Image (cartoon, rainbow, N blue to C red):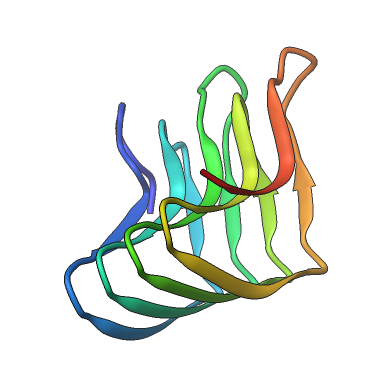
Length: 130
C-alpha cells in the first residue's frame, strides 16, 4: 500500500477483551507519514502478531516510523518480527511499547533497519515501558 499524507499504511486496534492472532507477511508498505505498520492492543485484549518478510519503506523527505506494537491497560502483546526491511525517518524503525500494566513477549530477529539520510532522528529498535 502507498499511503497518502498523514496516514498509517496499516493500522489495527484491538479493544476490550479481543483475542487476536494475525500474520503480516510478504507485503510492501510505502510513503506512510506516521507508521508503516501499527498494532494497538488495549484494555484486556491479547494479540499474537507475526510480522515477516515485509518491506516497510519510507522515502527521503517524508517523516515516519516503521513498525510499532503497543499494549496498554492489562493487555498482552506477543510478537515475532523477523526478516523485514524497514526504512524509517524521525522515530523508531521497530518499536515495542507497553503502558500501565500491559505485558509484551517476543522476538525481533534478522531485520534490515536503515534510515534514508543524515537528518534522521530516532532509534533502530526500541523496546520500552511507561
